[in-house]
Length: 333
Image (cartoon, rainbow, N blue to C red):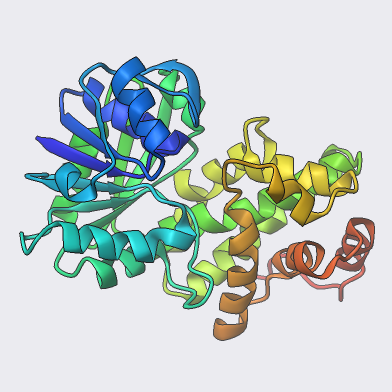
């Protein structure tokens, strides 16, 4: 089985290495020529996964059409804001061949259309069965073969099971799901809550506050998901609560670390200017607020994160405003 990974950031590179370790013939396309050279010459992605030796069977390409030749599986690992552009290039690179299953591993929402990544890929690569792969999975820990569990979601059960078989390994367990919307919303929205978690940490707030944030953040995610037709149970699973806990509390979380820096007084522009990797929660915050307004679902935490990111609101004031909202029941049976 031949697989093509499109995007050679830390996550795309890690998944390419995983698939190669599972015996697949893997090609990875990188935007950066220096990444291609580093992988092919040294078997290391020095730019995004330094000091981590990759499978020697993994081959990197600058030319997308060559990387796609004869492929049986495509992994879309580009940052969410360029998935539409890259998806269109993938479709062109197939040269009229029937598209194989496409696995979306980008966790975000498109800012303008508010579309999920599988919606974007279905539009740009028509005819391809699309699968969303998500769950609590820091790239470095997966690369180190630490036990990890994720979920593959698709409306096409056969495609989800194909992805399950391709990616599953002794350290990497893949479950399947038919809830494509819920799995993707969980993976995208948890990044927004993780920025808030970083803000709380940077403000030196305690465990009470963090527990409240994670719990109410999960409630926001579930409300929006249910309003969009997702299964509420999904948010209690790997793509919901699992990924939220990891990203809101783990030291390797890019979104959490961005929140910490904001709380320490650095501006968003200053932070992003020196970052090589993408904190998807920044773009997702605005999209989440837009989605909540579209479907009439309250997301007060996401609103305050967006206010801090884009309006310069003081984080301490944002916490105060959340705590002083109108009192209401948590649940009422």
